[in-house]
Amino acid sequence: MREIFTIADFGIVEAGIHLPGAPRDIVEYAKEEGVDEARVQSLLAAKVRWFHMDENQSDSKMICAAIEDLCTRMGGRGWLTRVTHLIYAHSQAFSMPAPPESVFSALLGRYDTLRPALSFSVEHAACASSVMALELAARLLHQDGAVDALALVVTSDRVFGNASHRIRQDGGVQSDGASALLVGTRGLRCCFGGITISTYDKLHEGPSTPENAATIARTTWLHTRQMLGEHRQHTGLDVADAAAILPINADYPYWLKIARALRIPPELIYADGITQRGHACSADLAVNLIDHGFALVDEDRWVVFCAQSNLGTIAALSLLPPGCRTGRHATAPGLREDCAECSICTP
Image (cartoon, rainbow, N blue to C red; front, side):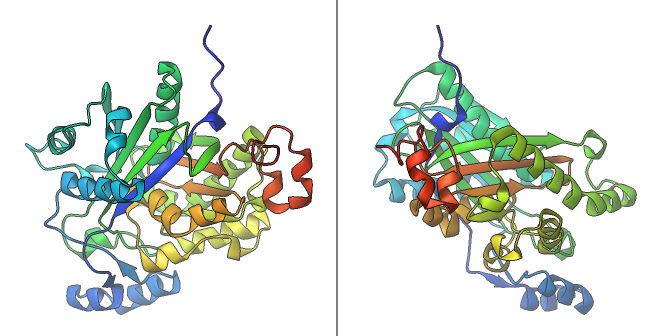
C-alpha cells in the first residue's frame, strides 16, 4: 500500500540561475529606446532599476548556463544520473524557442548522464508555472517511490523586440533569465511547507485586449491577497509570521496594497530583486531564493514565495527548514520544544 503523499517530505536540494550579461540600467536603456520620461519615473518609483538582457542567447543556452551554476553549487555533476523527471516551466509565447530547437533535445545532448524517464513542459500559467512544476515534481517522485531520485525543474524566459515588449508594465521590466531547481527528499536546502494555486478563469486570455489588461491591473493584487488567505487556511502558515515574502520581481506598488490589506509591515516584502535583478518571470523564485531566501531558512526561519500572473493564475509556496512541518518556531524560538513533529526541534 502506497504511503500518503506529504508535501513536506519534499523540497529543494539546490538551485542555480543564469541572468545573461552585465546588469542594465533602466534609465540608460530608456534613453536609448526613447521611452517617455514619465514612464521612467513611474518605474523608478516602483523600485525598478536594473535588469538583464541578451537577445543572442537561446532558451537552451540559458538553461544550460543555469544548470552549470547548479553543478557548481552541488560540487559536481554526479547528481545528474539520479534525475528521473525533467520539467521545463516557462511563461508565455515570447519565451518559446525558435524552431527547430528543442530544449529537451538540447539538454539531453549536452549532458550525457542526464536520462530522465519523463520530460514535459508546464506553461500557460505565466510566472506561476515554476510553482506548478515543483508540485508536479514532488508528486511524481512520491509516485515512483525511489528515495534517492531527483526531479530537475528548469525555466527560461527571454524577450524579443524593443522596449514596448521589455517594459510591459509600469511596475516592472522584463529580464532575460533561466533557472534550475533540484527537487528531492534528501540533502534539502528547504522543504515545502505548502503550495496553494488559485485560478481566475475569466482572465485566462491575458492582456489580449485593453479591457482585459485593465481588469488584470485592477484585480491582481486583490486576488493575491485572497490566495494568501487560502494558503493560510490550507497550511496553517500565516504569511505575517514568515521571515520574508519573496514576490515575483515586479509590481511593488501592488505589494504595498497587499501589505496594507494583510496588516503586515512592508519590510516583510523582499524588494531588492525588483531593483537589482528585474523580472525574469519563472526564474524569479530561484533568483530570490539564492539572493535572500536560503539564508533565512538557514537561520531556522521560513519564507513564502508568491507568483502572480497576467493569465489568472496565482500561486504561493511556503519554504521551511528541512524536516520542519510547522512554521511556529520561525518567529517564536521559545516554542521549539512544543514542535513535536519537527526533526529540527526534536532531533
